[in-house]
Image 1 (tube, rainbow, N blue to C red):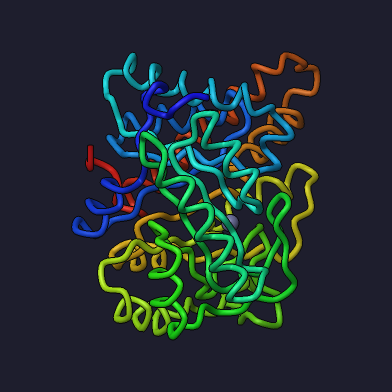
Image 2 (image 1 turned 135 degrees about the vertical axis):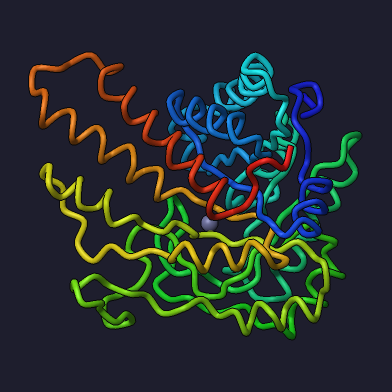
Length: 332
Ligand SMILES: [Zn+2]
């Protein structure tokens, strides 16, 4: 049994309070390897941004949960070494059972998501409530994120054909009965790098897909029902066309890629949305650089020579997100 405070981590409660009053959002970046955690910590230290390190159940299977937890501990010390003790949260992304959440909490996570959105409303409440009771009764309070509404798309073990927007009339009962600390909602974001089908989009003069706008009307209604309550957006990559082009130039194929425009995320970050999840953009940045090196230097076989540029591009991307999209830069 390890408490997150022993690892130097914090929960989300104070961070979200500050983010809502300061009208910005905390970045939630997924990691499962060394280069990703280096990029995240370097970018967040240099921009003086708090950060949520996210681990999905897929990442736990890929990288081993003991290694991941100790990487988060290392991240705290690494940030200190780099000269800025930024607040760092270790968060379970899309937990699907009470057992998984308990396991993470007991091994040092400071925050968990229980995603009961695929169950009925009543079952979602019952499951989320159990996780909150366990998380909140720990010696060091662990924060819990719940979800109402369903996002389309594929992300590790989570996938759904269709999205179902969050119904604003359900949020008060859900929040009151479960005692969650934050709520993930569905207002048109989606997992993966092809967030919309081409027939849902229009095309600009260059033939590039333009997605339908996020449903800010639903977000506003939710904010009216639970004023000041922390809201979370999943699936909020913008799928930069430059990365898609680099990947395709060097032999990749990413047909019909489309993300959420950054101006819409910037607008969301100024509302009660105080956590924005970005994963696909990081995958694209790394893949673009690795493909480029492989293609331009065919005799290169030292992993540091292609993972290094991938890491540096990832850092650049995250600095840009913190400074220009989420507004979390300078908030430490
Ligand atoms: Zn998600």
